Length: 337
Image (cartoon, rainbow, N blue to C red; front, side, top):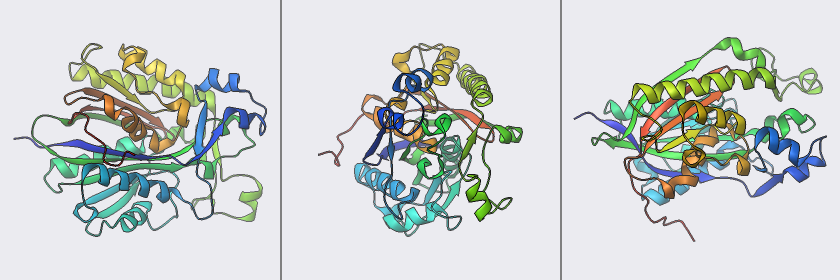
């Protein structure tokens, strides 16, 4: 029997502090109406406090996942953390998370593909399951985007938020789980979406800090155009290749970058808004956190056998789509109050 990698549980975490559009109006020249009409974002969560890195959110998401699924940390074989905002250059944020949760037998590593990172990591982790190498793999998507956002730049500060999600992958022989994937990248997109300094090309210095080069640089019009076309096209491609149509697709799970990009992708696939997972209004763009946060928010509505099309687009450029057949019906959450 063919072994596939199925998601058997989801965990999530967002910080308590909520940055509203109204608060942003006091920081930059913008309005709630302007932000909502262009992005669909109403609020975003921000991780506050000293020494609070991306791993803090990843740990909480993994701990919730383990509690919900009844698994012990020492039984986990592998942890992959998709992040664009690691705690440190090294060690990997995944290493920090695995140590904090007690996953003493797991090996762990980070994956960096900007907003497509969680999707790339999900495809990668699934290979370890499908080959029979491992039985329990956790994939984390987490970012503290507030750490690299310039809150004097109204073009970017309105978009991003902080958050984390995690999924558990386990073997399945019922034809459920990850069934197809189409992943792409194009390095010529670097000029349109990048962080100018902080890496080996331009290490941190007094000059790079003074020039505000450690923040996200985005040329919105170029990124929007490329994202709309490629994210929508690849989602439609994966659906068509698997004989899926608007009637047989149960859910579109799009990266939450911009409501207009999400709408364009749904239109290209041909499905209505009732089948689109949407929480950008609550969290903004949490980069690697968006897709697992969607799965967590909609978990109670998912049914065993549901057909999910996952699609994402990120800086670099990176983009792609996955076809996932959901593996379980809703079950009581032991962590719920």
